[in-house]
Image (cartoon, rainbow, N blue to C red; front, top):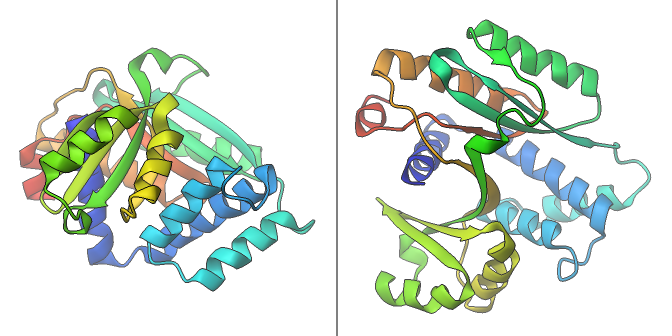
Length: 248
């Protein structure tokens, strides 16, 4: 799981450097709209909306923007989104799992396939790579936002499903089983812990280590997927080494 937290850390730093906030906002607004449309506007009875609001606040999204996105989801004007996932291999056998929300499935399939082809990969059949990834819950918290020492903080969360706790620079990564995601979310809210982001992720059971030149191509492929408006999450099994972090 450390590999995933390193990649999340890279995205966190890189986002601050290249001003991708508008792109982040677009994805969060879509998720707020879908969550409200599917489950209503009561975050206490709609865990998906609670997560989307939490992430919106973590990204410093204005309250008015959050409310407008939720209101749109409740109206008849909101688009009908379909959630679809794609699996495939990039170059050098790196596995990819792409989660999308789309109002035009043909467009999304075409775009995802085009990215696989561009980088010398191949789109696979549904379910072909499920065995490589495990579902987990991830919470990212700024270390400075924790009021107690990190050891005490961890101990306080064990009974709430904390499975792994990783610190990288100024960020803390909390992992839980998927079944404990909502329970942990409520616990952090009760303790007034500011969560920068939270999500259900796919963690690879094994990772592949590539030399930097080959890994760089995979990273460009990841970023190309993330640029697509229909793509909500990109998961892979590339090992993010210290060398990659330094050179990026």
